[in-house]
Image (tube, rainbow, N blue to C red):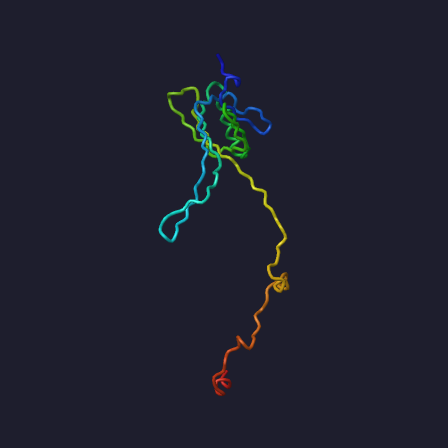
Amino acid sequence: MTPTSAQDVVAVLNADLAQVFETARAIKLTIGVGSKAMEHPLETGSVVTDHRIILPMTAELSLILSGEDYREVYQQIRELFKRGELLTVQTRVDSYPSMLIEKMPHEENADIYDGVALALSLKEAQFVTPQFSKLKVAQPKNSNTVKRGQQQPTETPATAPRRTSILGGMFK
């Protein structure tokens, strides 16, 4: 009985939604969904939590690469890691897009004599589209300083050194 992609509970898909490294057997998948609560101290000594930040999703995928093609499958995973290709992890309960391979440690021991145990760490890549807008000057009287470059300071009566005596001006 040979494993097929139809029996997979977990599938890793590329951008074209084609399954990658389909002969690798998924042993265990742990999806990490988390957030970070932002805490701020108050003057009274207590701490207030006023909002949270949703963290990128993570996935820990344990695989067994076995059979006569485990070296080719390992090289395929390694190439996906090097290129930083975005993958989709499909499970029974949900689909997790924009995941990239963050780590790919593997274990080789005598228990699995014709294969390799691989523990993939995947992390969600979150992209932000920058937004630009025209700078609005708060006070129109300050708008004349725009595009003036570096200016050399000039001496004004308020910043000029004060002379305390007639002799002080002679020895300058």
